[in-house]
Image 1 (spheres, rainbow, N blue to C red):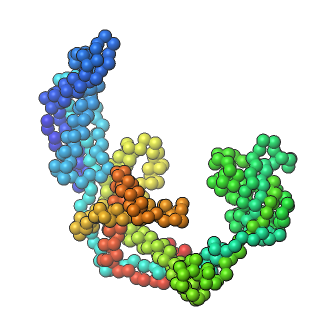
Image 2 (image 1 turned 45 degrees about the vertical axis):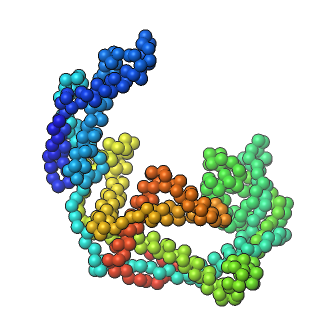
Length: 447
């Protein structure tokens, strides 16, 4: 066997593999014998099919498979031995060679390689990124306090509905003429006025009493939100999407959640007995909580800006034409329009990956199992809390994390996330971070 490499330029190469019969014959013979032992062919006892019969029937396909396996092993070993950093995967080079695929053929195969560029990481204190510190504005703070007080408030049943109330109502599907649609959708459910998106429809639901009826265009009310409409009517998403009918809404009851009083009982429920004793302390705690949530938003913004800075400074070139061919070859349904429109983002992400790997390697940054485990545990904890306010015990959470990381794909995703965070932390330590205080409204308009 002979394998050679032709450098086209610094980013592209062609590897040629020449295979002779002595390179593949033993593999093919073994595969034929293994096939003969397992084959079930009429006229032969199991395991007693002659290899010559298998060779006659399936020899050519077995030869093709074994040559392909040999090629794959040889190419992968060559890339590893030569320490070639390839992008994408090797692509078979199309040529006009035709083979009979008999057992005495010499074969020659050519593979295109896209090579990673050589570059240096060049970040310093001259590079500046804004680090936002988001302060809780009055409107955001009051909204949060109102929601918390309602969460711990008491339910009342006023005579007349007002904005923010919940109507416990029967919904009945109507025919185009306004009569009840026979066999149509009906459901008795809670209709939250704060979720109604059409202002005119919301206004029609204010001022209603028990027993009142209104006609409701449910698609318009929820701005064609299929998931929400399906949940309200207790139907599947497909049925909800196809519904064009109006509904008759009959009020069964008006529910109103009154805000909890700002008293010691309320403070103790929230923070534990005696932790907070005054309204000022309560507001300080809520401000701290809100700004902690904002800090996560600010951190995501900082990470995104560091990513942009890194990609903008990455002036090295990629083997673009090779990568486009590779993307097309590995995504058969990818259209030329999709490839053209999405390639720039793909190239940016690839450049970041190369930068990230370079930062980790050059700075000898370690990624420990304990860090991957902690990141996976944090993710699972957040997911469980979405469905249950009751937190899992440390032991249970640890067991779930061990199971989660046994899935190789999921473990690799977490590993890559931790690696990205390590690279971003390095950038934070090198570039200049200009802190800037903004309130939530101003931050939402920052690009």
